[in-house]
Length: 381
Image 1 (cartoon, one colour):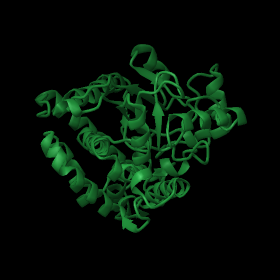
Image 2: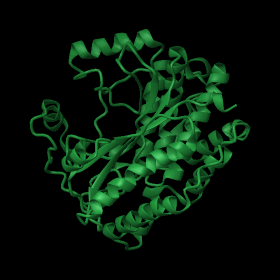
Image 3: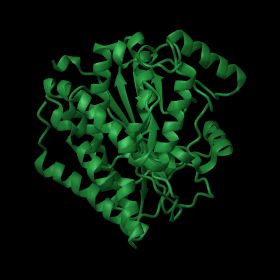
C-alpha cells in the first residue's frame, strides 16, 4: 500500500542569531559556503529545500542533516539556529538586505518591509493529476487553519508578546488580497493572468496565500500542492506528523471526492468558502487551538482543537492500513500540552523572559539533532 503515498518535500526557512535569541544575519556568507542554502531578501534568515521522497525516514534525514551542517558552521562563529517564526528579539524597523543589487529584493523591501521577514515551513506534496491537484487545493484551503494551529510558534516580536499565537501569519502580506476557490486548472490560469495584467501580482510566484499550486512553469505546468501557512516547526517529529496528517487527508480525498472535496460536499458556495477559510486562518493565527472556527461542510462553529481531533480520528483507519499511525502521535501531545506558542506564552505569563524561552528551545533543537546522530534509527515504514 505504500505506493499510495505522495512525494513530499519541504522548504525550510530559518533565522540565525546568538544563543540568547538575538537575530544576526549571515545568510549571504552561508550561501557562499553551502550550495543547498539560499538567501532571502533579508539576510537574517535563509532557506534550504529538501529532495522530494515518499519515505518518512528519508525525509527525517533530509530535514535534520542540513541543520547539523549549518549548526556546525554557526557554532564556529558563536551563533546558532533560532526557533520561532518572527523577529522575536530583532529590529523590525530596519530591513537588512542580503543582496543590494537584486531588483526583486528591492521590490520586496519597498512594498512590504520587514513584514515578510519571517521563518516558516512550506510542505509540498507531488500531485501530477490536475483534477486531483485542484480538488486537494480546495480541501487544504478550507482546512489550512488547522495546520497553522499545530505549528504556531510566533507569539513574540521585537522583544514583546504580541497577543497572538502566530504573529507571522497576522503580519505576512497575503497577496492578492482576495484569492478564489479554484474550480479547475483553467480557472487558475485565467485568474493568474488577470492578476498579472492588473498589477495585483508582480510575477507568477507572487501568490502568497495559505496554499497554492506549484510546478516547473506556473501557471501552466503544475505538479504539486504547496501548503504555506505553517510556522517554523523546530521539532522534526511534529513536522512529520503534520505532513502525515496532510497526506492522509489527501489520500482520503483521492478515494472519495464526493465526501472530501468542498465543492461537492459543502452546502456553502465557493465565494463564501473562500471568505470562511481566510477568516478561519486569521482566527487561528490569533488563538490557535482555542480558536472558534467555521466548518467548511456546513458552516457550523467548532473549536479548532476539536476539529483537529476529528480529522485525526477520520484518518486513523487509513493510517493504520498504511503503517503511518505512529507518525501521527506527536499531534496528540500538541492537543494535550499546547503548541509552541501556547507553551511559550504560558511560561511568559509566569515571569519567564523571552530570552530564556528562546535559549531553552535552542537547546532542545540541538538535543534533537544530537539524538539523531547517536541513534540514527529510521521510522518503521
